[in-house]
Amino acid sequence: MAALIDYKCPCCGGGIEFDSQSQNMKCPYCDTEFEVDAIKEFNEVSQPEQDDFSWDNPSSEWGASEQDGMKVYSCENCGGQIVADETTSASACPYCDSPIVMSGQFEGGLKPDLIIPFKIYKEGAKAALENFLKGKFFLPKSFITDNRIEEIKGVYVPYWLFDCEADAKLKYKATKTRSWRSGDYRYTETKHYMVIRNGDIQFDKVPVDASTKMPDELSEAIEPYNYADCKEFLPAYLAGYLSDKYDVDSEISQVRANERIKTSTQQEFADTVNGYDTVIPESINIQLRSGKIRYALLPVWMLNTKYNGKMYNFSMNGQTGKFVGNLPVDWGKFWKLFAGITAGVGALAFAFQAFIL
Image (cartoon, rainbow, N blue to C red; front, side, top):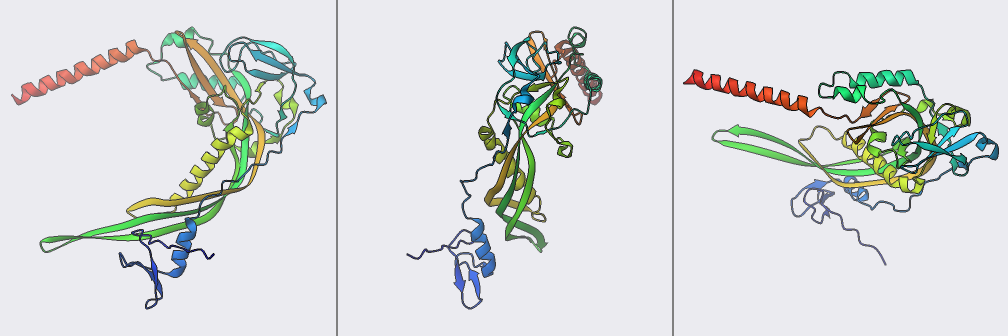
């Protein structure tokens, strides 16, 4: 049975027909005309997205010789497994600061494909933390003096890195409006446009945190990494540092990877639609292909410290030095300053009232 194709008008959505007189497609409702090729492309953009895309995960298993000399520490609080070489001294979990104990020889799990070695050493991380705390007027002094701020731990955080190509077909409704006055009347003219963008984008090493212990807001806040520094993984890079073992499967992480890739694709194409007064997305079709996943370890300096019974977390990109974290507030200072500002505003208002009276 032959399939019927129902072409829609990009402006009003009504059924559009071929007009033999103009040799164009013409809408009988709004009288807008379009070239045949333009309407064909417009309707092709509206095809549904694929739902059978799959990623290829090439990660390999650890070799028996590579596991020699690797130790596993278990956190008594969060239950995480921290991997380190046998010379590493580990006394506290880098995520929750609880004591960690040796649990035995490392076994199982996928071997990382890539690693970005630490570029910023411990002294540089301490200096970055000190600079981060400087100038924070509402930061309690005791937060610095009464806590082990100097204890910063270097940990390789597990990530899944996603490579793929995104084929995109997007269409937008756009308008240009101009107004002018003639005599006693003001006229407004609005022109409607159909804007179509087709193309593909190559994505390399889109990161998704593979550890439930590392909050996503922290892991994404210290991005981006410079992946030109990626090295083929060797256990020797772990010497002197801790390494978290992934506990989020790559299949679960694909949902977040797809979301990040499609959002970035939409933004890239939307940024090319310029010169209009309004732009409204009408159809977005993004198909992914040639997907590949690699398992990587990325360097992070971490500090977790308790203050007045609350945990405060800091993270720093061990390659670029980007620093993020949450801080306590000295509410005594805050309310004193607020009271001073309120009193000053009140005095100013009183003076102004006296002046005008």
